[in-house]
Image (tube, rainbow, N blue to C red):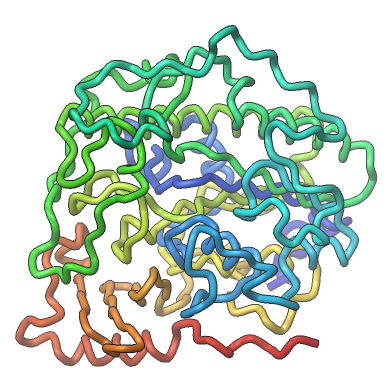
Amino acid sequence: VIALLFALCPSLFAAQPNILMIAVDDLRPELRCYGVEQVHSPNLDRLASQSLLFNRAYCMVPTCGASRASLMTSIRPAQGRFMTHLASAEKEAPGITTLNTQLKQHGYTTLSNGKVFHHPEDNAAGWSEPAWRPGAPAAGAPPPAPKKKGGKGKAKAAAAPKDEKNKSRGRPYGISDLSDDEHSDGQVALKTIADLRRMKEGGQPFFIAAGFFKPHLPFICPKKYWDLYPEGTFKLPANYHPPKDAPAVSIHNSGELRAYSGVPKNGPLPDEMALEMLRGYHACVSFTDAQIGRVLAELERLDLAKNTIVILWGDHGWNLAEHTLWCKHSCYETSMRVPLMIRVPGIEGGRKTDALTELIDVYPTLCELADVPVPAHVQGRSFVPLLSDPEQPWKSQAIGRFTNGDTIRTDTHRFTEYSSREQGAFARMMYDHRTDPGENVNISEQVGQSSIVEDLTSRLRAGKGKPGDLPAKP
């Protein structure tokens, strides 16, 4: 495959390519380039028009720390490994060489801006400089913009339930009176731009990972992004109810959202609040799109784009009231499916693939494109071949998990099995995406489904991550 890419674009291999990796927290494939016309995402849409866009990419576990640790190690989650938002690659996969470390050991300057690993101190030795978060001093970065007097961001008025016990996190959405640069993601953009300027003069290939926080809760951003979505833009989803015959364990109480003030502790959100949540989520998507656009524009201005791979991914999906769920934390398609796109200099862009792809595939892909060895521990598969032929036969399944649920996505179905050490397998669900893409009717127990259930159970158990499947520490 590398020989083919060389034949197509020999200039790509004149020197090791730079890599700009853009991570976005809680971003689901809710962009215009994914066919959602009402979303204002011009910069990501432009990047997609120059990239290979993955229609069916999946995270390994739908919570931030675990997903990022899995991606950066190319190791599947398992019971006791990469299970929660606090997961640490260094602590839970000791001795494993992470992506940034592998690139650093093979000649790359490696920089981390914003949220890359969940813990900024995770795998610190793999970065050429300390991982940077907004508010920390940084080499080459402009000073933070002075905050306006009293500028904490004002929340847009909305109907609120009387339960006001959870005040610690404030409101879950609102309009900010701060400038873009006073927000954390504006600072991530400024820091990354400053780093690109430094790296331009460095003469060494770079791997810059820029992690943007929004559209993570709370949905607070400047008014101009809210104005892109007037009231009445959104409707509650048609499946604003649990799936028929779904196991109770598959539906959670959206606890991450319940921690914000004004949100009822149980039950559905008032419609007015739910609709404002939809507006706020998309406003924050557009805000982050604008910050990413600034970084990509600087990459072009510095004439670095011609030798820089750009890859963008979301760490997991996000539920927008489907099945009554908000946030992530489930084994449904809405939690597991993620945006993924990659632009490789000299390779035709503007193409899409339906190949089943997993975020653990990012690590070996970037190594192959950078002509860096792929460590033996890697469990993902490089998708470099898809760059030249996006429609070729590919993976037959994508496997992930959340807490006690393991889930497999095939070309046609999603099947999930719930188990515990005490009970063994105690619940399951299956959805046929050919007839039920919204996953609204669990057919795992229906007559005539036993053969496919048996097959998917076997494939899931064989393919999922397992404790003890890592190589022994050196």
